[in-house]
Length: 228
Image 1 (cartoon, rainbow, N blue to C red):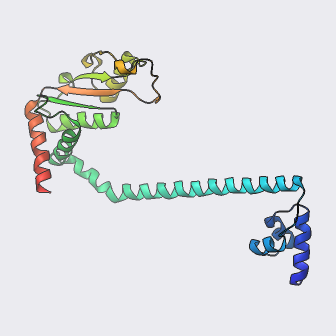
Image 2 (spheres, helix red, strand yellow):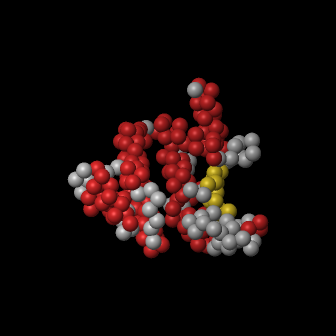
Image 3 (cartoon, rainbow, N blue to C red):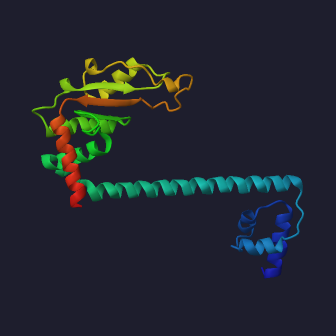
């Protein structure tokens, strides 16, 4: 079949409402879509055919976007796995008490109350993982001083949240007895304003005596800042 015959057949198929992909399949030749567009330029299609082509194009675009999103997600997952493999050796360093104390010092300096404002350990956060990590670091680095019994906790919460449920949640997450949790009043600014995030469990504040530890952690952090 010569080029002119191909052109005529392509135009005929287009008049029946075929898409360019369907024309390629019918002719069994991979004709560039730009060429097909040039050949079929000016052809008036019935409304029904126009709507059919629009739907096919729209469906194909959705499939392409979904495939691209899936590929991007897979690429990101592979990237994250690579990061885990690259840095997994750091887990072994968690056996080193000095290494743990450095981590604890940095966490406390960034998130905890400073000695000039508050005498004693006090740190609040909304992330259960961070607070659990902080509590366990304290117990590992200062086992002779820190235990669950000396912690005192309270949860800053919104007016539509149940403080009893929040205290139970944080007690379970941190492994601190429920009797160590105080009940406090909700933030009055949130009255009449529903909590939008279902997973928001307030800001849990963990406090304990230990001004010497507080000062030591601040000192370690400042030494690191000055050294680096």
